[in-house]
Length: 402
Image (cartoon, rainbow, N blue to C red; front, top):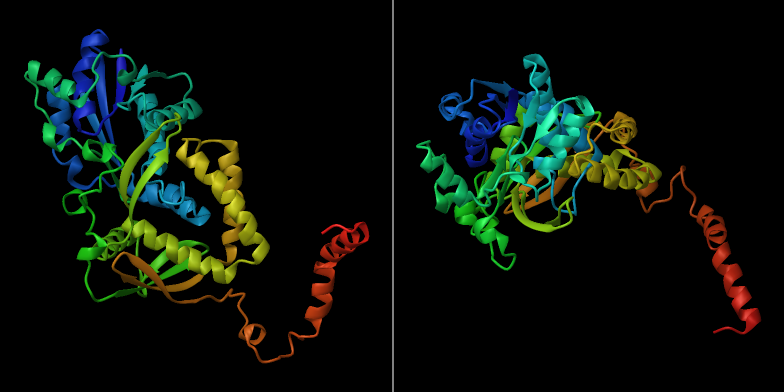
């Protein structure tokens, strides 16, 4: 039997390799690390995977594809889960699942295995992607079948077999990192009454209290809803995210502490760092305020909520998500221009926006009467808008209602 394993090099997937070999008749294990921006987490990964018993490992750099084909569509939709979470883990899972399928088909694998727990969202996201792209491939989820019940037992499993342990018990926060964000779960965070110790928890930046006393100004340029330049310089998607993460982290931007509703029905608590993403969302929204009309803006909010839920629940490869993306793309045809922002101690403050497609007219907005607008026109408009209210009030008067 040949099994493709979604491999991170962390504790769970390190245990899974020997466990699969023991429980699936010494199956051939092909480890796959899909690099969506984990940074130095991929260092030495090949050696670790082979030492654990994998026959080979793929380390796939899909960072640019991740930003261009997954993050940017999400930004254009302005998808935010429960008003706080910028979907950093959620948006990476469809791409990872897609690459797992591609390698499984290439290798002629019988199954794809993941290390997600039976309580989490990621099992759903991975498996829905696999089912959508290769329904014939078997899915193995050890956390739903083995008798290991904790990280401490995983560590013991490795130690009894003389295998290296990739983490210490006292450092066992559950973290997920990519170019867009990093999440923190577990340990003291499992009690929502505990305040996070940002000084020791944060990885991408500092708390607002530790941010500089001097603000940082930046300018982001967009073309059809997609960021293309920073401070007047054209940048690649990876360069842009790296720089925005650096600037945002330095200024205490993008820290979210959230008790969220998981897909499986329970609540969970996590701390998310999304410094660059938070800046990008703020800039994009400022530009939309200038370039989109009222009706489009209003209806896009309806689309945004559904688009967000689809991403969170792993329904990326669905007809509805693709249809909503087509609508969003159509709204972005005029979302082109430049946005200036001031970053200061966790805050993102608008500092000016311009666009060749601006719907703002100083002549219309001015208190001075101009040729495009007559103050007298408002009287007829108000009379028509208020007609249902007037009729209802007359009816109540005739009935003697109070």
